[in-house]
Image (cartoon, rainbow, N blue to C red; front, side, top):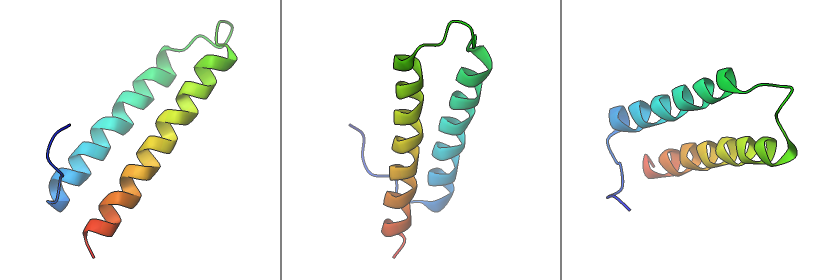
Length: 61
């Protein structure tokens, strides 16, 4: 793992990159071929982004 991101601008860039990657994933998914495992993985990605947002929020305190 890398070192913690404490700079607010770097945190925003990191989250934006993760969100962009997730948006690309959503665009690439074929609804006819998506299975439960794919949906579970997407939920996990969203939960990881949420956890990172909470982590960054607590670092700013």
